[in-house]
Image (tube, rainbow, N blue to C red; front, top):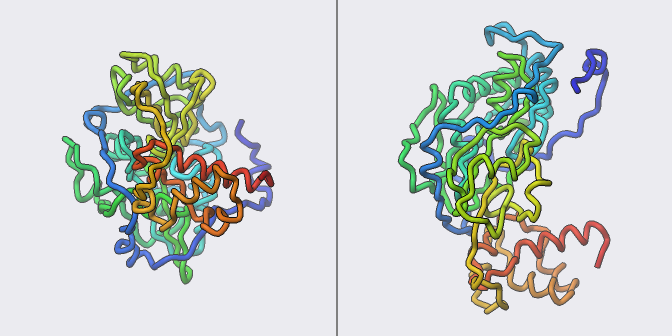
Length: 377
């Protein structure tokens, strides 16, 4: 439920999104090229070329009772935009942070706003699709975000490695330049924090879908009640990008698109970084869901032991040796794992993707990190 007006004006201490030091924004473009990583097959068309499919429950759509829609961006003050983002409960899909907190953190600073529409993982186009098909709402939301933080510059980021598109990505969208992020997967932005700061200048990364919700909140006084997701996989009869009501279950989404065959694996989230789920009826769509993918895998495609090929080490963008990490974790050699800098893992899943033994290397490392934080051995 929306907070009361009294609660809105009360002093609050917000936990700001993490920041990290890096190059200045004008030099950042040269750094978007990791030495490691891997080239991924994208499989984005024909999904990206199609219109968005709505799957929205009208009863879940709500207006913000405390607000009236604005008609003109010149009529709204920067602090009002941040307040609207708060009342609308907008969550940035790229990192899960409330949008108003990210905007508030940038007040009084020199800011460049970059729109994240990378969608570098295979199948997924749940940021780029809404950007292309709802570009006026997205760039309108960007204009609002830029006004809220008094941004000096802005741009839209698109992944260079997309090769199977029938739709043409323009060099600019509604006057906003489109920059192609080069290099292998993962781009540096996959692990970038929400705010990147140096010498008083902040580069603010905002998801394209969060900006669409900001536009609707300001000009239509609508709360965020939907998420944009990709539904795909070799089991899905009608793969597409969808706008789905929040809390809709993965089962309902798959029923909407239809299944040609029963899947052996359903992945929620990224096709590389997502999680396999056993009971799709218990998995609701969240603002950060991004994708629901249904696959039928060959039963003969079984996991077998590491063959020491070293491919995982070749593609790791952080220069780690996932093979040794995996072995150390499986054998409970904690001292060895500690010396191998397992905490530097960014969770990109490149090692698992290229592993010919089909071992869940990245999953093991992620489990180990979680267990060490919890004090288990």
